Image (tube, rainbow, N blue to C red; front, side):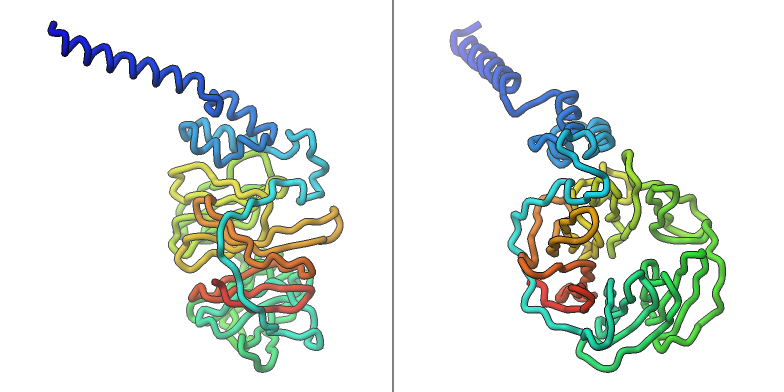
Length: 336
């Protein structure tokens, strides 16, 4: 063997040995067991996102299953959502000056949702009682129905009708003026298409008659699945852990965003707007609106207000506006 070839082999072998030493000795690299253990304990350096980056999918999934706030010695109580992981804002998105759509003289309203054409908002009274509609640019307040507890699951349809779903399991479609399209009918489990909650788990059914697939993972009481407009992702909540985004095709584990409620998708499916609230176990003390990218890597605090408690956001069909509520008044603001 020539001296030149021997020199090359020696150089390559030395480089490989040096690389192995760096990999083994690198203080930031931990074993799968260490990563999962750190996630269970709620360590700051091993959030579910970092576990996803550093492990194979099955182990990342295992770490997520056991990421529970109760495992953190500093965890206070399940009745205190503010003890969950709070987001760290690293994005630059903001909303502009808000404009009130409703007034105190008209009543107290919650949970706004946009009409398909983006010209009206539908909302309920506290307790999700009744459904009411008002134009974004003003006009008179219209009552669609005064039925109790129908506001949480009711939705606008692309044709402008509203599907009203009550707590007793019946559904009915209403015209924009509140007149019925059809009679109330029981909702058959096998015919329900989309996301739904059953026995503290979130399921998704792509088409009527198909088997539903569970999309939530972990030891929590999950609820509130909202599917992205492109049908690729679902955002849902854990009662004790917070907000998640998961791919509907099961191609990866859920992404844990931490504290968050009421997700509303951007129309292109690139992220969600939601509220992050702090409470004392009895009432809200503070709340801001946030925007998170679908991969959870970029998070923007949209409001950053000290004297306002913004909750229940809804993104307009064109993605240019956000509707939300503050102390019973419905507002809209441009999204920048």
